[in-house]
Length: 227
Image 1 (spheres, rainbow, N blue to C red):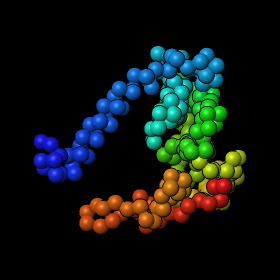
Image 2 (tube, rainbow, N blue to C red):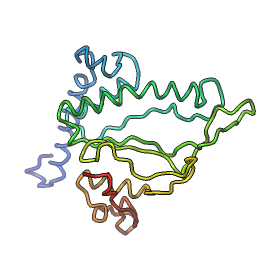
Image 3 (cartoon, rainbow, N blue to C red):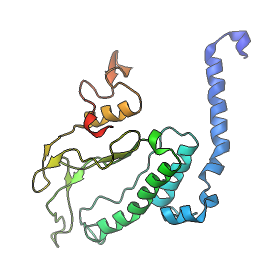
């Protein structure tokens, strides 16, 4: 059925979607191939083409941003350090996890900056909760783990007008409770949306007969962390 025959704008929308899907599929092989990166880039990230690694994903993230991809999400799932087995504690396990991510995430920020992309790219680094300041022993054979902890933990942001080197908030002397600059997840969401050009109080979606906000009825922009 042709648009001229049906005069239905949804036909044009569907055609546009198929065309976008085709362009994405044809560009994927080139974008995903990190072999053509110069050697100094591989050394900076610590990448090994053809092997699965967080470093490879960071380099791929930069390539996706260069291609105009608006949202890129990376995962690293080796942080559940309960100390329940060899390499799962805050000793060996934490050192290994930090070693795997420190170089490539620093390289990603440096690479985005040197290509003029960091000013327009918001990088958010964090997880769903922190770890307790006290040690944990789930097996009864030593204390080498940390349990889940939601009262205080750290996230950081870079680029897109976020202040450099700014620390917002503080915990008590043992790192258990947040006592200064306490920030709710809705505040974080409101701040991210503001950097993306949205007013979190006006951006709504309809669900079950009423309009909802991504920040519900809460949240305020954390202006202290913005330039």
